[in-house]
Length: 120
Image 1 (spheres, rainbow, N blue to C red):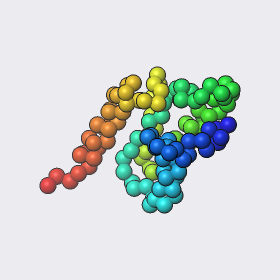
Image 2 (image 1 turned 30 degrees about the vertical axis):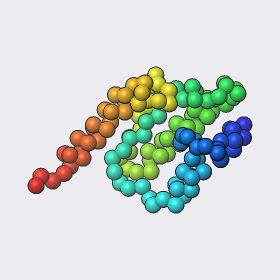
Image 3 (image 1 turned 180 degrees about the vertical axis):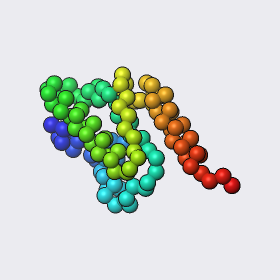
Image 4 (image 1 turned 90 degrees about the vertical axis):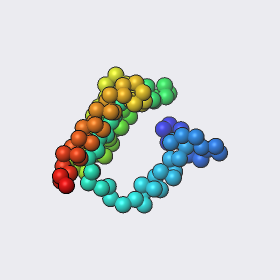
């Protein structure tokens, strides 16, 4: 079902959001260089079920949520020092629903970068 849904949105006539550019994104990822060693954080919604259509069974929804979290953890593991934050009580729009969950790690990374700079 998921593949069928994705195939319907893979070539929209009037692309308007990130999902509409799925094919181009996949191609860019395949052709990209290795990830740089930089501080980074992956934010994952603790309640991703809100983004899943109701056509899936309860077990399928749970399985998809766990798969998503596992894929996010794998992303974090691609670069040593990556951090994974599971944001509880929010859906897909973490930056709107609880902006501090996004802002706090950014400030922390900036502070780490500034602290590691040699004084000139």
